[in-house]
Length: 150
Length: 120
Image (cartoon, rainbow over all chains, first blue to last red; front, side, top):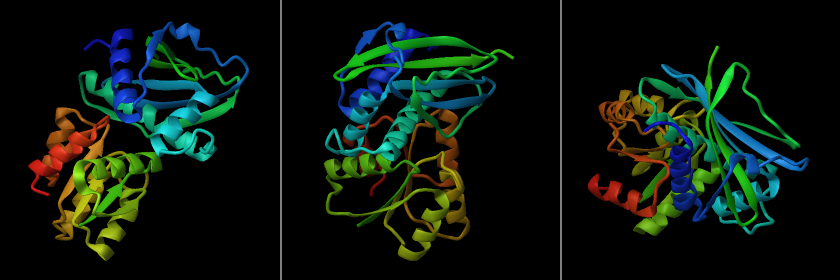
């Protein structure tokens, strides 16, 4: 399966549906912007015959909603630690599915989770292979696959 | 029945536990460990009836845990619940002694089917 927007949509749709029971609609990846608010980003690296990363990026409110769904908590209950755990695990699952779609012998890293206001991440020496935007109750989020170029 | 769930993500441990209950294993005692090293100690002490383990974890990975168990002669039924689901990983898991590998994301039916086929 080529790693393109459609591939990401299928992977993410499958994960969010089966693990969170959340149905998503598709929006342009550019529709998701940190906009100066609190933001979470989690990524996993894929290394080996292919080098790159898979990132899940979303605002705090939506991250909290996803976390509540995973933990079976009320929407207002999750704290920062739970949110980092949940978003990291979502990136882990997305990364694992992307890794499975890439030929060759590759390894998946543990997730790295960042949080901040107006958070923007970059992957120096890499190019965006594909990205997809999603919307659900609570906001939008984006999933991006980058490939190392140098 | 005592089931040990091993995953560095607390959220995933809860989801696996939820899946077990939905798959009909709600009467089981669920024990948790957040990495392979902690799981190895708990298995030595508590001798669970089944281990469900992630693959990628700090301290000790799931495959390292399984190999350590078999090296110590501990034949506890063992299955992976992991985002690592390539054919190569499945073969590695089988060769190390795993009964099954459930790929994330999964449903309660996936858990039930895997355990049922494994005779657990």
